[in-house]
Amino acid sequence: MRSGPKPPSDLTKHKGIETVRQIQFLMVLCSVLPPDGKAREMLRLALDVSNEEFPDGVEPIHDLHPQATKTWLEFFWTRVGISPEERELIDWQNDKPSMDIAVEELQEAERRLGIRLAPRTVE
Image 1 (cartoon, rainbow, N blue to C red):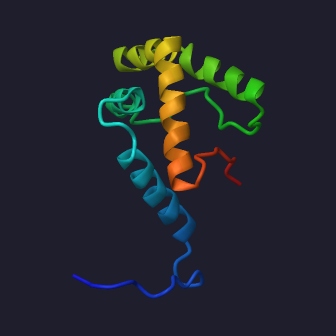
Image 2 (spheres, one colour; image 1 turned 90 degrees about the horizontal axis):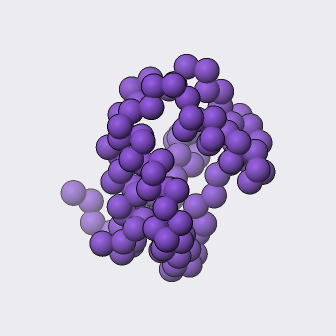
Image 3 (spheres, rainbow, N blue to C red; image 1 turned 135 degrees about the horizontal axis):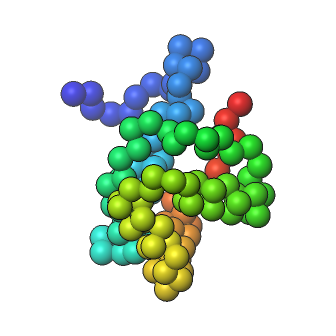
């Protein structure tokens, strides 16, 4: 096992470095959430959902405006064939007190880390 800092990443040799950093940030972000918090509860529910294949008829999102993402999410969550695990996740996110607490927890984690978990479209 290596000890000490690693040398700087060479972006010409490691084309997936941005994705690696996203994964690492997600790991750290999850690790600083309150252990018995609502955000962890939601993440556990989300990880229990098994979508082996992306649902038919659901196109990738292209517009990240809050109203456009709301419309996309409503389409995603009202499609035919929702699993019981997905239904539980949908019910969870519709519980305003739980969502409000999870928002506070995520914002506090982002503040502590100095990085915001923000969506961006894929080219």
